[in-house]
Image (cartoon, rainbow, N blue to C red; front, side, top):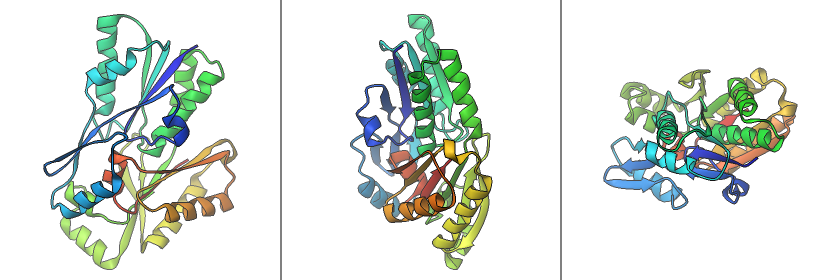
Length: 279
């Protein structure tokens, strides 16, 4: 049975997925002041980070249109799956669902399901890989959907930010708190709730202590890691990501490990030096 997996561009693709015809990225657009950046293969992370650092304004993102999703659903594949960043953080999920409805109205019935990742970034990658695994196992469409939805419920997302500047700019953190945190070198350890919203797990003084704290929390909360993939994405800090990978692998056994640099949307939120871990 043929299949296609559509992932909005907040989800990172490994080199293998970039060359796999079953997978396609649907780009969001990023805006920094008057600069419009398409989050596709032309995205230049270094230039984007320079624009963000130089701007006093909050960078913005806009989700793909329902028509763009519908275009990707219009294909020869019998089963189509879309994976979007959390519906609590973006309109991408709603847009993907509207695209599905448009397809049904204009072209008739087809197996299309939209997964709300309740995560972002490398978390979306894991969901896409789970859908691929189910398809390769020969599961029927309904069973793939059920299995992947259960997988999403069991996922955990964590991240540590080098800077709070983007959170300050977009209003998620007061100026005073950001200034105090910066002066004291306090780094928040964040996570995603089961509903897909962001919450603070803890904090530590200095990036290394914050990463240690995140690792400790992951190890305490992780279950059945032998059957799971450890996924890490980083924004321009590969050495830091590899240290997190090494420490987690020393303390837990994983089925596989993925390390990716963040794409555009993830770079916007993680900012320079940010680390995202999904198990």
